Length: 262
Image 1: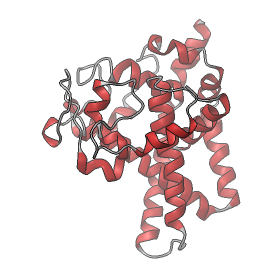
Image 2: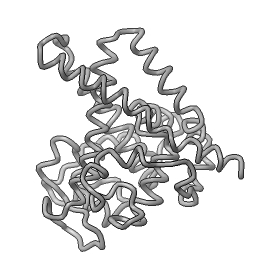
Image 3: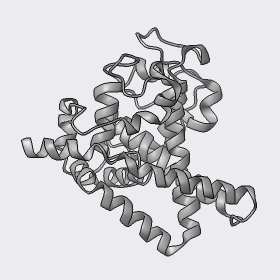
């Protein structure tokens, strides 16, 4: 187990793969603005967003792994984790450790890695580059450490990213740019906005009394979808549906209903 824990901690620094996605993502946006993108870029980006953001990170990393809010078949879990890996936000063990073990346990306190109480830009992106090997305890994710699928995606996280991106780009650079890179770029910024804005209490409202600053922000919905109902989530983290009122729509939950087995 000691060796496994060491491997886990060594892998937690792998967030630096995020920078190429941000850089190339900016290029893809620029190409759309100047009109050199193919006419089908929009459906490719929407499809990629559904897979990478909604299924991969929001459903897979967030609700399935971090909160054990629903169950899926092994092959479905593998597909969700592959989608999430394409976003370059870190391995499933890294992501779950940060979210479950620190963000929810110490919300808006000094041990919350990405609280805006430590500054807007810290919360938005800089926290990712302040992480050092051994900084975070993995006791909160013992179940994930015993999951062979999660361990595989953690151990070979870098290889999965590079092989996947290279293979897709080899098929079509334009497909890679608009169906993978741009959705990954949007996903990274969507969760950065969620981490930052939904913990600034003056920007939203609360349905539930909680001991943190998390709020629901209606106007953020077009960008982050169901993740905008953040106060609801902190009040009932194990619920896979984040919307509570009729206008609090959660499209990710619609997809979860199609794939869950519990």
